[in-house]
Structure formats: C-alpha cells, structure tokens
Image (cartoon, rainbow, N blue to C red):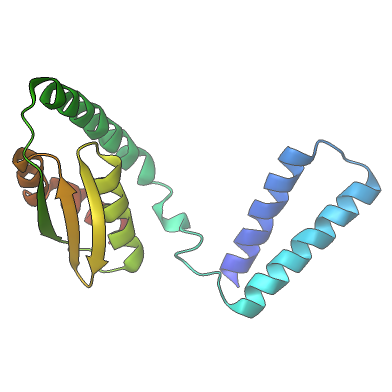
Length: 154
C-alpha cells in the first residue's frame, strides 16, 4: 500500500509539472487518469520496492558522483588506447555479490556505462563482460565497483 501511495504522489507531481493547465476539467481528468493507472498497477501487482526504490534515494547521489568519475577516467583511457592501438579485447566472467536482482542490474548497467566494458549476460551471480583491454578486465575483477554497488543496493 505504501508503494501505491508513493506512485500516486509521484504521478500527480509529474502530471502537474508537465500539464501547465490548472482548470477544474483538466485537473479532474488528470486525477482520473492517475487513479486508473494506479488501480491497474495495483491489480497487476507490479508496484514494489524495486519499481519505486525510495530506499536508494539518500545513497544514489554519492554513487553517481563516483560512477561519473570512473566514466571520465575510463573515457580518457579508452581514447588513449585507441590512438596508440594498445587494445587487447577479452571476455571475462565477474562475480556479482549483490543479493537482489535490482543490485545485480545496477552492477551490470554500471559496467556497461563505463567505457571499454560491456555486460553481455547475467546468469545467477555471474556477469559476463567484454572488456576492451585486459587492464580494464583486471580493474573490474578487483571488485571496487562490486563493493560500491553492494553498499548501494545490496
């Protein structure tokens, strides 16, 4: 029920910010559309702690700043390696220590966001990764990103 109320508030705020019209007719149609969407999602039982991850709100800005720094460093590294021709592509399996599916998805997406690495597959606790260089694969195997995602999402 808590997630349904959160979804209702989130949709109402989003609708009000994007609408720009505040007549009674428009407001009542907006309320009706929000009620229908919330009812459908409640009946389908698709609203849970993973679809509305409010518990991550406080920790996500710090993780995003760290990830931004990693993306910038990796971008520079990839550019230098491409200019010098020092690439050595490799496919590796990386263990994901996250307990939740959302944590594993955040980890795999973080790997893909970092230039020079792409998550290919997630199977149980193993993420198959294509790395542009062996150094990139080694850095990933050291587990700093895994630890940070585990602290973020479990």
